[in-house]
Image (tube, rainbow over the protein chains, first blue to last red):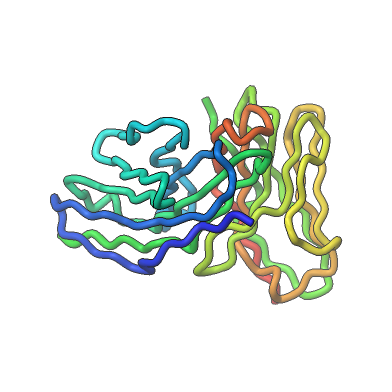
Length: 114
Length: 114
């Protein structure tokens, strides 16, 4: 079974600084997709970034980028120039092969200090 | 374009009662998935529907059921409510029911069982 592990329950960062959130996963599939979702206190789960496993190039979306290490099954999220609005729970998620469902980690609560 | 919508926003029920939660997908999306998010955890997959057919079911008891209508909206029904059913119920829509399609989430329905 696929599993997703986020080992950092909480992280904090100073405004304008950079922070990296960690995620590891376990799968026997060769074709899969990884996601980072953000869930602010408003509860809406918002897609931050998506990575296709067959692509060697790391995905980037403005201030958000990932470090995808396929052999190590690691998928970390880097947030540059952190802003107060980045404060939220961040979830790493996996889907792949015939597995259409999303499997989530337990989340990392990010605090941004002014 | 409107995103995924869910109703109601909040709901309070007592043990043993029945509840129906509703979801409207993004226009053009034909697949709806339901997730349960218990406080402090990542979402857990309950159901996926595509073209009105159930495509997958998570590890939830038969008290949980769902259906999808011709307009692709969906209902999640929970019978004989237990205290442990208290959670945020998230609906996600995608264009189809394959892992290549990104799932977009609604704001959720907060269910409290007393």
